[in-house]
Amino acid sequence: MRRVHLRSPDAKMQQMFDSWLNGPATIARAAVCSATDEQRKAVMKNNEAVYKQMREYLLWLFQDKCAYCEADYRSTRVQVEHFRPKSRVTGEKNHPGYYWLMFDPGNLLPSCSLCNSRKRNRFPVSGRRAVVPGDDLKLEEPDLLNPYEDTDIDSHIAFVTDETDEKLFGVAKEVGNSRKGHESIVSYGLNDDAKVRARQMEMKAFLREFKDAFEDAGRRAKLWKSLHDGSRQFSAACEAKVSAWIESLFQEQKKYLA
Image (cartoon, helix red, strand yellow):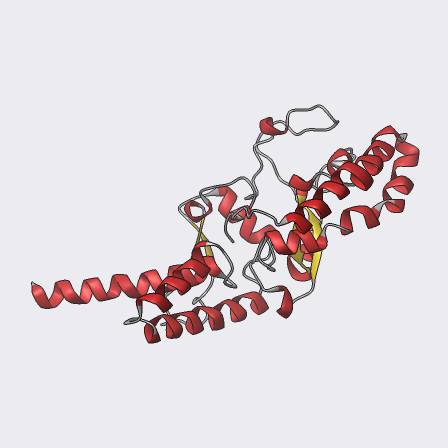
């Protein structure tokens, strides 16, 4: 998991986004927000297709990957997910859900079916929860990492790079006692067996590619770029793996130069 690197859309993509935001999204939001509590569920159901229209744009924005686990959409089914759940909140019996954010692009993410089925309506907060439109979202202090907003994700989640123990290799762990790290790993299911296995394979593959390109500055630059712009599947874990290998070379050098 890592923060999304915002990309500059071409004219076609920008027009697609603007047309959606100023047209269907605005109309649907007005309908949902003006509905009574009794009407709202049906109105939301009737407008589900509107937020799903953002799938292509979101996949482009997130480099064709799940926003949470970074799995490539070609290897998993990707859905449009709401960071703040739209219709109910786990553990909050009387919360109506963040219905007013149902069509907010800052609340929409591409999520693989595994992450989406794990997270569902989970949205733990440490602060004051917003309940109605107009409540200050900043006061919530979410306990889940947000790929749009959190710039220090690697301060909360790290990946085991040591292959000595195959069961631990590739596993996501919270850094220190990070509550955000822990809650995000659990809520997004980052350590589900299938995700860990896929992550292990990609970490090994990337390190092999990097070693093969070690004396080729041009190839190395492309590989580094794929990590930093997030286009590589499981880029955060791959970056941790290659960084650990480079550090081992420095340690080896120190030993022989001592």
